[in-house]
Image 1 (tube, helix red, strand yellow):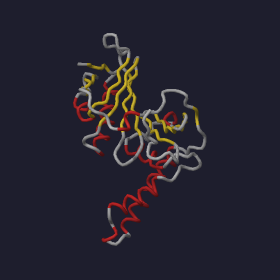
Image 2 (cartoon, one colour):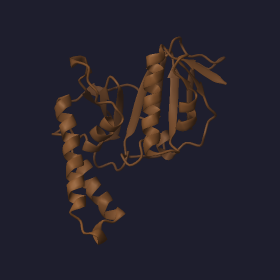
Image 3 (cartoon, one colour):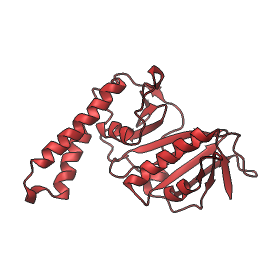
Length: 225
């Protein structure tokens, strides 16, 4: 049994909040967790958003388990949430599960470079609010017989596949960041940033990141490598 000691109870609370939000969209969600040194990274795919969400946490001491210098395993998000002890600032790693396809292809660890053109935080929030309002308005205008799942999905894809300004970042990435609590603000230091590495774009905030493959490569651009 592997027990990870987080830096403090705030890290534990933030991790639990992230897992709870993932489970809100998919009660059977899985997450891939990696630990190396004093860093823990948790990767998840919130259902319907077609993005990867990343939440990092600080460990109280460098990870080590016998001769293993790193931890890399896919587990149940629900079981991981149940193992978080906020008071003790620990999390017990549950048994591994068969990971979904997305867990086999993660964004690169390095090589990220800043990309220009990302609007300010308030503008990103307004962009999400406008998308939600448009979706509601267009679906409410549909006749009952037209309000099918296929039509709702079509409208949603049209709205959330639009890009943010000239960045190439799909609006669904910003929507996901907002839904997962990443677009919070306590001051100027919380301004989000946009970065790229190879085929990936990453919207990064102090509270977590959302990564997507560039347009034209399909949902997450998943491939077996």
